[in-house]
Image 1 (cartoon, helix red, strand yellow):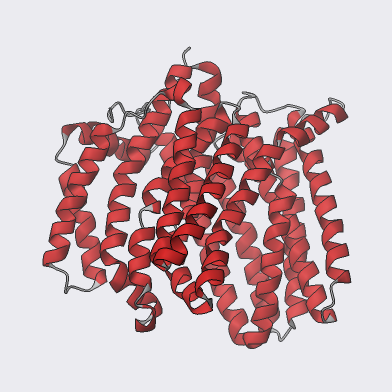
Image 2 (cartoon, helix red, strand yellow):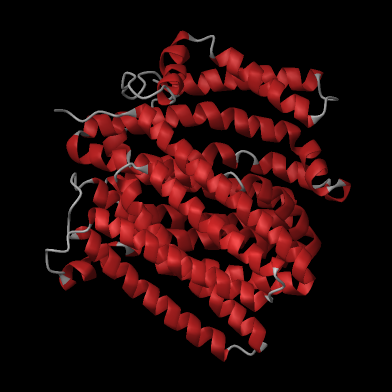
Length: 490
């Protein structure tokens, strides 16, 4: 039987992962606020430094294995396989190396003993979290996204609540770090027990050459996040070098508004990856169809989102950061168009992973980083913060262009013309209304704009028959008719 795309299931998967992510971020934010009140600026500074260190530990411990796991496991087609065991052993090796490096680095760093322990404990807790979250990738690969989302939210909520209890009973910051590390260790053991009992085939002997092959294959997956980390800090470093610290504050205020949307694009790519990997192996035509339709749906959302952020940028900056950041408004208007490019990059990157062309994905990121560096060096001295925002868009556009070129022989040119036209028309309509109703507060302008856009795009029968029908079927009670990928968007 020919493989087809279950578009409603992909959409449900995305909402499941997004819900878990948002709820997890919320409890973490509450925990951060409580820490700031309990330990003041100095204590929060120590914890913030530790979380930065922990973030790099998480990235290094994962070593690109999350996406590699989703791609490889989704193609197996059955539950029991030795591949699970190979991935677990590979994760154990990377996590051990990172933990030893962290131990060595922290205890030779000339800092106070308390700070040293906080750095180590938060770092190792992130290693535990990386292993547990990596094992949840087994569920993601089998498109059991609800279980994966519940698992991630549960781990983050449990560590935050445990930390809050320690603060409540008068514990020190080191006590909080110990509690978080202990909870993440317990979560790792619990998730590992469930995941491996469900999937791993312990009857087959472990193949060490297969472990080495897994480690080697994950290298391109590990390089891309490192390049993206460099790219997200390059603009800040060069703005600081050319324009000074105050300019960094103005630029970063605008960038944070756009940056908060990026995790959603990553979750979108993860939601698509299992289906895309399966389809590329079984039905290349359906794979191409999935990529085109995903791009079509993304522009229907990203074009009005970018337009809306651009329109309300000055007022939004004033609400979030105050009048002293007024210059950030123009910067945000220029950066807002990355909201249009970023989901397309996420979808095309997923397509390359599914096609086993992850090396070309690395090439795209290197190209974007190199061209971005040149653009920053040329435009920041010339145009200041406006130049930095333009250079950032140039870097993202370069990545998009390389990804499209790398996929040209598989998907051709994206067939999204009608969706772009409809999205531009709908965005233009609410932009006109926005200028008429500009004095209204944001809490009125935003819902009104969404309603106008939804009304305009729903006037098109193609949208009603495909995207709106997709939404209805995605959240229809169990037992409804299964839908394939929408046909519109050419």
